[in-house]
Length: 188
Image (cartoon, rainbow, N blue to C red; front, side, top):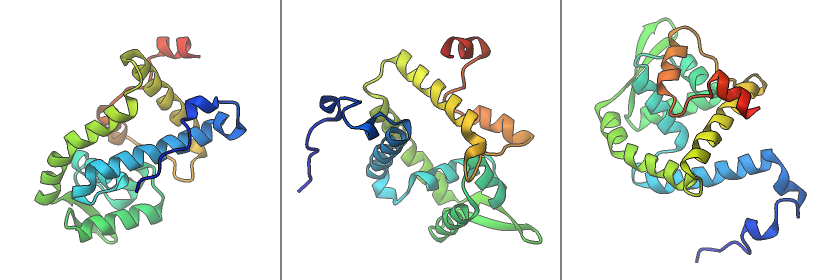
């Protein structure tokens, strides 16, 4: 039996309980919701959001090493190590020794097939999360998220660090671009 929430958040009001008026709480809550929707949509593939992001990054940057993968996705060393080990165990990525301790990461054929099967389901996750927003609100929401993440990146325990070609590739991979200078001024 699935439990239903006692009452919708909209009926409580944003200031009725202090915690509901905190951006960190709401961001964490939206992350929980997003993860739940993702897990439901990708359950046939036994894939987590971080594993999917890692596969997409390796697809975009074949031969990336584990350290750069962690920096590219803003994952700490332990997390990226666990993710790579699990993906390797699922036979979705291969490690090829490049030099000394460095290994280059590559997708397997099974990973490519999985990505193609999962991509439409993941697009559905985004659509579900953003469903209550108009097209303009979605654009503004994504621009504001980019702005907040970019401004606060250095405060993270695992900041996203890009250098050289990684910057160009990250911009190409971004589904929504940060606001232009003119729009930044309008957004505050």
